[in-house]
Amino acid sequence: MLHSNPPTIITCINNITALMQMISNNFINKNGMLQHELVMCTFYFNSGGGCLPYPSTSVLLLISQVANNATNYRSLRYSEELAGKIPIVHIKDVCRAHIFCAETLSITGRFLCASSYVTSAEIAKYYLETFPQLNQEYLEDNGREIEWGSRKLEDKGFAYKHSTETILDDSLECVKRPGII
Image 1 (cartoon, one colour):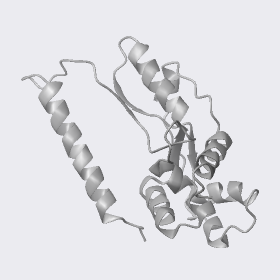
Image 2 (cartoon, one colour):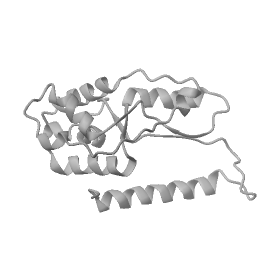
Image 3 (tube, helix red, strand yellow):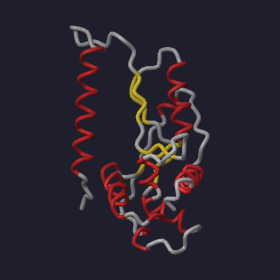
């Protein structure tokens, strides 16, 4: 059963439609050929803090199990069920990846910016070490064995600097500042 969130799905569809329109208007000539180099550096969950005075939605979803926030947890599980695993990346690696793409000559295409691919159960098991009172429901795995990932950025020479553990730890630190946890 998918934990769908209709407003989120509508937002995703609207964003994709707007992006397709922008690309067709600005990057494709009359013959259907790209007239400019286009680099799309996408990510699912960028986390690990940052300089915002409040935690991002990605951070809130990744710590939803610790915060025992059922709504955010359903969104996290929906993303996992949709993609098979949850691609995560530290916000500092996202910034570095964008700079890398801008500075690399003749780089074009779509790149998934993700240093790790985890399940919600793996996130819960990691947080269980620090929060033994974690709801046991969060430790249930979906039972699917999914192997996937994208190394396209790494194949071009980019290297991620932040591990899964660092991303999850920094996400917790980010929510401690405003007192969410």
